[in-house]
Length: 586
Image (cartoon, rainbow, N blue to C red; front, side, top):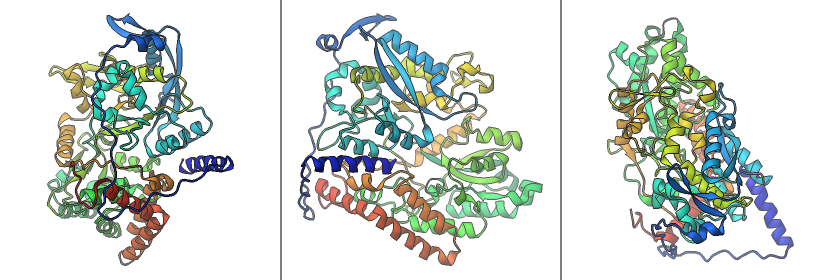
């Protein structure tokens, strides 16, 4: 993905040079402590009003649909929309699902917009989108998890600036605007140019990022309380290792006290981030926090040292560095009952796919269970878990989109409360039952009709404008955030309460674009992946080699782009805020 964007950029630069274009000189150096950045005027909350001129100008009339006046095109408009595909066994193509058909029919009925879904594999979406963009066949409503490639494409003139559309056509997107709120609508707005090259999808459970899970039944068998400190967690792992025969019987040789994966920056995060100083400043967080796997923070090396010691003491899956997130063996080990602890998404063991706890119970027994713990305390004695600001995914219109108004209306349609409720939850009596206490109780998905199978968690891959459970019209629906098939309510509530109690949302810092991040990459195919490589190498060597391997790896990381990103971020902070450690509005 990154190489493709760089190749396109290089081609454009060559063509510009052949046309006689000149390169602008670099901006003057910024003196220490001198803040020169002037932010574009902030957008006011726009009044959503009907504008007859707008309607007529774009061939729209207000039509009474189900007792509601909605904008409807006089002539059918055609748009293409991205749909992430996860290829579950029972439904290989999300575009052929009942839900995609329902959306197509309803958008056509309400707005006279004909929608074609373009499937993009969720796990390779960066590569696939790069190919579609390069071939000028990207969906009119496109989406990427990483916003940096969108900015790169925008810099080449490949993305439509949404700011003028939002300002002029806010009356056409009242549902989207109400759901997101002003801040989220304008989240990706450039602070200097005021351009808006993509909407961010809102993550309504943004403070529920990750959790550490341990085998509750093993704790009970050994008479161990859930660990509350790192030392207690380590003692627990040792107890698992030393009691393998008691816990696993004939499978004792399969014992894995702690199971990370090759993406160790994610699946080992809480161990390592416990060593980040609690008093990290806003400036330090901004300068060094560009790597989603936290590789450049102070203290990460000492956290990796702990993992290295655990690895050499036989407490970690010996093959973790050989298996990435796409290899199912890591999950298989959890479901077969060989693993005592792991770190992952807060709801990962509860989900029906891959079905960690449910499959574990099928293989081991009904008493088998994973529960969440928070034992990794920092230097202030708290398990502070960094989370995002509630944004996720980025929706953009490529320059090949010839129907931006229809695309905006589609975004509003998919954000309608009744639409998102139905797409997420399905039909009462088929996908859920109403419980006596007002909870929605999901039914066994093995009993769903194949044509009505929900192909991804809550159908979020067909709902680009948000993830997780947003505020809904029926209060009972909110409870389904805790409604995982076969999972006890108390277990999910324990995880929700624990992760929210220790969630830490850092101050949001907005500066000019950091160009070097686009040049060197941010995803797992870029700097994040390189940091993971270093961690994998350093954690799996003998203890006496750890420092040399880690330091050499970090030096390679810095030379490959890390230092350039850090230097540019440091300069951008000074340009924007001056020589201060804390954000003025923090």
